Picture 1 (cartoon, rainbow, N blue to C red):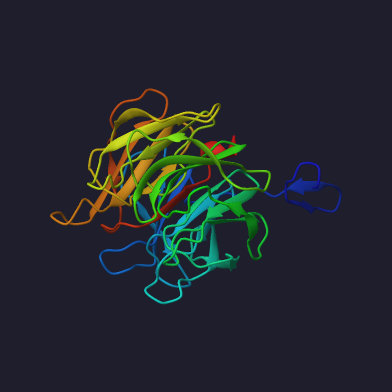
Picture 2 (spheres, rainbow, N blue to C red):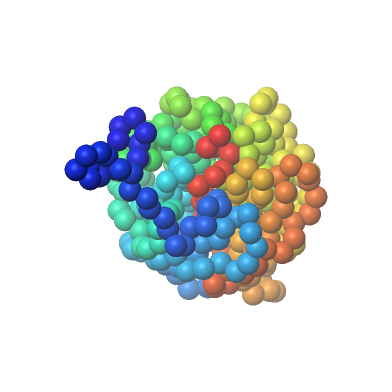
Length: 323
């Protein structure tokens, strides 16, 4: 039915709606975590329901390559997993996608304009934007694509300062890329208007230089959050940045474990950080913790990933870029 957008069938005298359900999607916002390093690279995809607590569950696998330092973005239907590092040269350009309402392996989407490690991706309901990271040089380019279709990415514009390993956040109209390295660690925040094309603009600064904060959109429609990372020592600090006006970040709270390269997901109520690298004197962590986006304060325990790993990307079907 093109009016209701519902699937119907003809029963001989009237059209009837087909009732469907997923036994593994309980109605809450779903977060997914893709790939990473254990320290060997893995193709694992895990999922959680953000409004609950508990351990992550196996979702499927990355079909093409085993990736660390990928990025991802999402609509409320699908997640796009972008590039990363698979140990080969040149770095892969491929885009792959999963459908949130099911479980299973990734499907090919298309290609980025360049293969990079440490890209940063964000989106609203319609468009995905990927800022390319290191090739291992720093191209400083930004790509875009329409999430609901498949095909190769197109040029969006350029970064103000070329970098890799930025944190990302999005409202329905604005995207933020915060921190990163080139190879010096940066504090600057750059912004794009998601619906347009053009070069990024300076927005403000984080409270300190930081790279490799939680990879994934931690945001509601009002604020973006940048959790953990490398300053260059591992940090627990969470910064909050308001989308409405240009300005600097402020301290918001702390994660339960200091680490870089966790995967990050959110609905509009909770932010979640999963896994990460605590530093050379500690093993990779499988810790998942969460914090309230509205109240401020420190994170608390959520559960555990299926594998202790770092360098995984995260996405959800209910982040702040979806309104």
